[in-house]
Image (tube, rainbow, N blue to C red):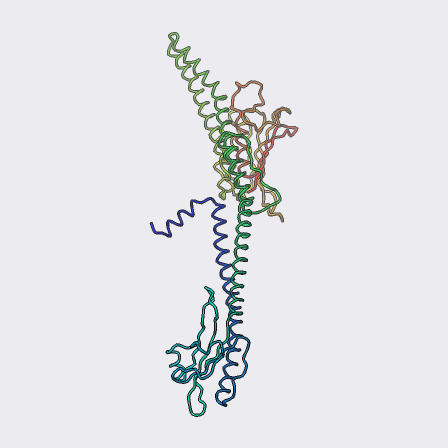
Length: 465
């Protein structure tokens, strides 16, 4: 593992708040360093330009004085000079440098050959005394070559730069501390809801029921959206758990009766000898109960599958063909009972899930044939164009009969699981037919309701298509 990979691994193991604060600190350090460097460079450039201008003006005046043989003029504050011959002997100088050579032998030789020599004496850091900036140039006077050295003290310039460095360092440290503190407080405040969500999830993992995260209603940031997403996930988990408990409870409740009947038939058949006809009757009774178990299990599984999906798979289908194929298996039963079974369906095309809607229509027709009287009418039509609100056309499907109708007290719970209008729970049917119809309609995004028409009963399905 490389050094950089190791650093990234150690950084990734830090808590999120520490990583955010460290990232803010590093970023602010780079920004402050760059800003301080820019400020220092601009101030140094301005001070050096001023120093250079003063030194250049002083050197020009010295050159003129040497050429004319006059006394050197006074220079700016802290200025010094030396006039040397080609061998480096001092011919004239300021009192402070009369016995101190300002040029090295190499610099003296370079200046004697006509080059301009520029050099700083002393350093900014560490602090050194008597810092100078000098320029040396050859000047001809009276047919002889002279080297004129002009120098100015850098003390005020260096002191100003050192003070600037100290102030920039102090300000940068304060800014870094303040930025790190603000970053820490901001990260803690931003991640506090996440920690609250984590605590809530831990409570849920410990078996808490009906838990929802406390999400502010007046915000719409990333953390708030995360909270809403988690709450929707909790809703789905709770709904799934409720469906699971309902499925188990319904199955155990409804399977008990046919299983008890099977056990009773088999006990009677085993406890005393029986004739072939009696055994055949017993087997037929057992077959009927087994078929009832199969139908009940299929209905429960279908309801569970519908409840566990968010949407149905829609596909174009001709409405008349869909309704007629759902009604066709019941025509023989209607004819045997001497009852009319009519279909009035539009020839338009709708987008529905025929895999689920076809058995739902069949359940309604079967209920009407078993529990009602007179003719059964199935009507299906598409109503309404696309509205300004974006709502499209809706399929309205009605299965009506001319029987006694639903008992008034049964209508509010007609679509509940195992709800039956008959007083006896041993009557034919499982009580899941209308529950299945309601589940199919809801999965399509529609509604279902039952009503008494005055001439009988009607079940109405309305769903977008």
